[in-house]
Length: 399
Image (tube, rainbow, N blue to C red; front, side, top):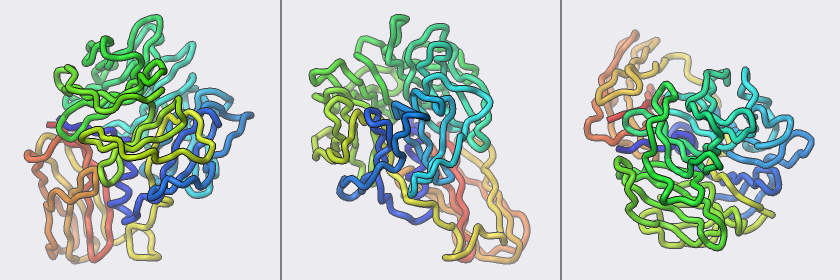
């Protein structure tokens, strides 16, 4: 089983699509009510790309890149916290509210689901379930969980059966576990019991199927990163320990794990396999209570020739079915006879398959079958290249 956190993949896929390096690290700084930007290569502070504005928003929560290359940010308090806002990742310009049709109540963690929609957890007094918004329009679609009491739900992931997994930080009503919900929002039980946690906040699946969970802890070095069997929920090991309050993570292109220490005001770097400490990567810029980390390109570049817009001489359709197991159809059309190829990339930008390899095709509609029985479940990018121009889409494999 290998279902990766989709929100963390968007920026990685942008690298394959736009051929841009991940130049920056964006960190949510809860204590300064801002989003801070750092150099990805050195960890040096650049600026508060989303500056604090106490009249509109406070207590920065999650930072997330969308397929449009914009930075999506949640704030827990303030008049603007009722909606998720988008920002220009280079200038910090507020591009307005993305979500609509539903006022969020103290939003916290966000994720892009395998269906392309935006999932947002809430800690509100009146609303505490995970809200779902259309990934293109931001329109409210419903709630993905059905809890009758506030459990302080946090981060999200999806298993191989497409069930929603949510970590519960816990409240007087219970929680402090990894909870499962079906597509109707029905609670299916705990995958990982509360016995292991002081207050879990983040989770994701590794490529080998292990489930990783960040436990915020209770201070005094109790924050940690735990590894569980992704199918049984049984603990395998403690990967990282000794953090004051652990929250927020990212994995770079070299496979190193970045974890925020909400209590020490640092972002640490570790070997993601062994958990060995690499360095204190970010410790500047007045960072206070980091709780979300994301790598991202400075802008979305054209996928066509330099200086050209999106190609108008060919189109690429969404694969069908999607999600799929293990075969899907990729359709596209050409306005004139051309040489075309289709490549498939994993979350690290590595080419894992080439369903169509430099074939001369006539004008018209075409399709090719892609069989992925030898690949792990997860989200992949497929890319159509025609005479040097490129279009890309994502697809989800569920084994």
